[in-house]
Structures are given as structure tokens and as C-alpha cells.
Image (cartoon, rainbow, N blue to C red):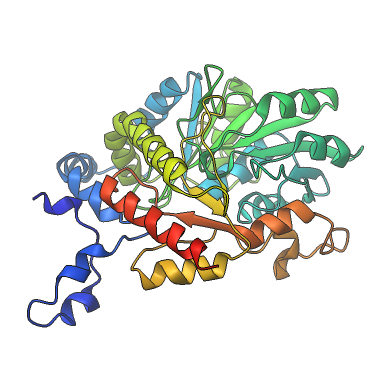
Length: 395
């Protein structure tokens, strides 16, 4: 038996085992187990880290440049700018587009505050757009009705790995002279109509934190674009505002350089992204077949939407009961995200009281993420399906 295929075991669980009380231990299905992938590719990862140690260059060096080139080629764009996190990719992207204090940026409120925080960090004002109740991504009709004369930019989030209705959203943005940014944090490698996510808008922003479809061993982010001037401006901002010779400062930037170890690890993993995304789709298809759709609204994969299932999300008004049942069965789950941005204490906005975004608020109260990562075994996925169906049968 390949021990790397077994679910992760917490230390305290091992310490509490007595005699041969082991069978139940292997019925557990962790929501996420990063050790499985990193153990499977430990040789490639160690070799990548050793290259950095031997080079003596630890930020924004040859590994970063190598990853930028390889990631740009994967997405068929000329420019990629590596930064220190996904959140900073959005902030630097906004600043590279000239967004400033007081400008209004359209975004959704159900994506975990990343865009909202970046918008507010530069003094701009978030304008929240209603979501489509089926896809949970930005509604084209909602965008059209939310645009005001003060709106400058729209951030479209490809949530849970599902590609948003990007063609319609881009058309609306063009009609109103809005610049479009794609938040691709959860959709790395997704393709629609032959185009990679991040290539419809003027820039695409990516997060490479460990749980993402392409994950480093820590925080890292990236920006892709077709526009040379935007790429140059983003690079200048990430260098704390310094010129290419790093001797003069024309703007106020910030230090947001990609860590060389993270870049090297990402380079080691990048060739597997397509295979891993295919496995995620296969897991999602198993969920779609075996879960009882009459009892829950499923995050459904259709051939046209290009989803890569960074998360597999079901919806039910009995979320807490279902999650508690799964926990009793030893199955992990998570909620992404229970409180919409406009109702967060830090993000309260008098123009967006409770009830202003009814579909967003309803979705946030119902979504539940099930285990969905390439290293899950088919047996484990079936265990999750059985437990979910069992919990719904009792409601």
C-alpha cells in the first residue's frame, strides 16, 4: 500500500490510539491534506529549494524570472509579474491601472474580502454587485445596474474555480468604459472558449498560497497582462516605486517581491497543473453523479464553463446540520465564505445595508465546501457522498 495515499492523521489522534483500535482512523477524510502532494513530489521540491540555497539569491532572482516566463507562456500572454501574495497582486494591479483615492471599483461581496481590502487599502471605494444565484459569480445584469458615473474598474472573480460569465461582463465593461480585472485566485488553469482566465481583462491576478490549484509552500501571487506599460508600472510598484536601475523613485510603491523559494517550488509544480485540474474535474463529476441534487444545490460542472474546482461547493439551507454530521463521520468540510464583505464589521457601508444584496447573503448562508483536491482517492470521495446523502435524508 502506498502510504502517501492515506489521509493525514493528527498527532493527538495517534497518541490516543490504544491496542489495535485503528480501523476507524482510516475512515477519516480530511478537508485538505497538503502533505500528500508535497510528499509525492518531494524530490522535485527539494531540488528546487536546493537551487535557491546554492544561488545565494533569495528574492526576485532567476527563479522568479523563470517562473514569470513559464507562467506567462502557459497563459499565452507576454508579461507576468511575480509578487509576494495574491492580495498584493490585486492592489498593485489596481495601482498600475491608475486607480486612486476616491475612485469607485465594482466587485462582489462573497469572495472573502480580498478585492474589498485591496480597494480600500488604496483609498478607493468598493461598489458591490449582486451575484448570479446559480453560478455565485458576478451577475451581468447586476453589473449593468450597479455602474455609476464614478465607476472606473470592475473586478470579476472566478469563484470556486468556476469561470464567471466573462464574455457578457466584458461587453458591459466596454459599454461603460470600465477597465476589467480578473481575480483568478481560485481558477488557475481554467479555460473558456480557448482562452485562459486572466486574459479577457486588462490584467489577471493570481494567488499561489498552498491550498490553491497551483500552490507554493507559503504566500505568493502574480499578475498577467498583454500590456507592456501596465507590466512596467506593476514592476515599478512592487520594487517600492524604484526605477529599473533601482536608484530613483518616481512613485510611492511597496516592497512586494516574490520569494525565490516560492518561485522555485511553483516552477517544480507548474507542469502538473493541467493534470491536477483534470483530477479535480473527475472528483467533481463523481460528486455530481452521487449527490442527491433534489436536496442540495450543487456547484455543477458543465462543458461550457471551464471550471477547475479549486473548491467543490454545495448549497443547503441546513448547512450547519450537514456539516455537523460530516464532522461526526470524520469528514472535513469548510465554509467559503459565511459573511459577505458588506456585512463585515470592518467593511460596513451605509449604502449597502442587510438585504441590499439578497442573493449574495442567501448564498453565504448556504454554501458548504466538500473535500476536493487531486490526491483524494475515489473511495474517499464516495465516503463523502454517502455521508452527505445520509445527512440530507435525516433532515
